[in-house]
Amino acid sequence: MRKTWAVAWKELRQIARDPLTLVMLIGIPGLMLVLYGYALNFDVRHVALAVDDRDHSAASRALVDAFIASTYFDLAAALPAESDLEIVMQRREAQVVLVIPERFGEHLAGGRKAPVQIVLDGADARTATTILGYANAITAERNLALLSAATATSAAAPLRFRPRVWYNPELQSSHFLVPGLIGVILMLTAVLSTALSVVREKERGTLEQLRTSPLGTFHLLLGKTLPYLFFSLAATLLILIAARALFGVEVRGPKLALFLATLLFIAGALSLGLLISSVSTSQAMAFQIGSLASLLPTVLLSGFVFPISSMPRPLQWFTLVVPARHYLVILRGIILKGAGLGPFGPQLAALGIFTTVVLALAAWRLSRQGS
Image 1 (tube, helix red, strand yellow):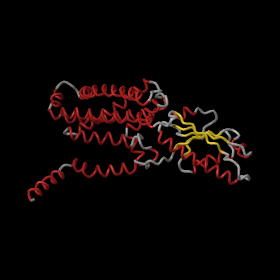
Image 2 (tube, helix red, strand yellow):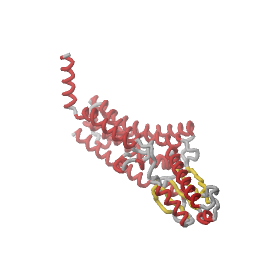
Image 3 (cartoon, helix red, strand yellow):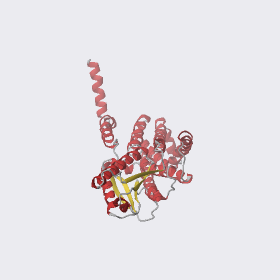
Image 4 (cartoon, one colour):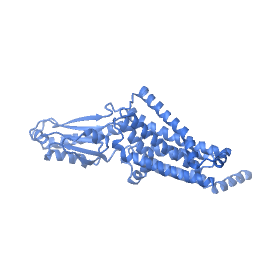
């Protein structure tokens, strides 16, 4: 037993002298608890609501107030007459548009049916289903209030709720998940393949031989990443072909826009892999850090599964540094909504900044190690 305790004590001392192991054993479980506890939230709140009020009556304002007072919807815009709802949806100015037709208040006052339309972004099928439930409940409550104020207690429900789901009318979850899976797969494979490739050179000692050659840091990094860039683009093509053949998910937007956005995203992922390789001393360490830095943020904090609007505000700010968050917005816009790159200027800028900063850090660290 003393021998066992001696070995255990030696291992504890080894762990205490290794900060990375301490972080893996203590820090990561706490980090995962925080991320899972706050990010895994199936509630849908703070839905961006745009209102196309063509009646401008007291009754129409009361209906809008009912949506806002529910705390599920936040008023994002009051649309002017003849607004293009397609552009509003593509630019993500609103996720839901409440359309109140003309003579809405007059119909209610006369005891006639008053139709109301909800135009909904159905790209996220699960969120869209939840929002439809909220809208139905609010409309039902408003009908009860109107009936209780009416003189004829046997009157039928005056509000006629007409939902219209765009981009995914059948609310199929595959249309939402498949574009998200593209981002997850590309992020994980690009980061790990690049990180493991460079660290493998370190372990074999061939990286030092490359550094002593006339190659500069830029040429070395470019040569190490170009093959993985090519294979990542080929993997994207295969995924899109499989998505269309197996799930019926077709690219509705311009193919060139999809290619350029994917190229920028993969460049950022490869840059992150290079940075991870610069701080890793073994392939096992590179695999652990790469998995942690790519898989968890992409799945939990990108909007792939859980809506970012339902997360706490500090966590929403943190998601801004997750490249998959911006890429998935572009991806769903091009694939499901048929948009080009025009509505996604902020997302493209965020991906460009991420790629530039991370690549500069990776080049700086690798050049220092070679000096």
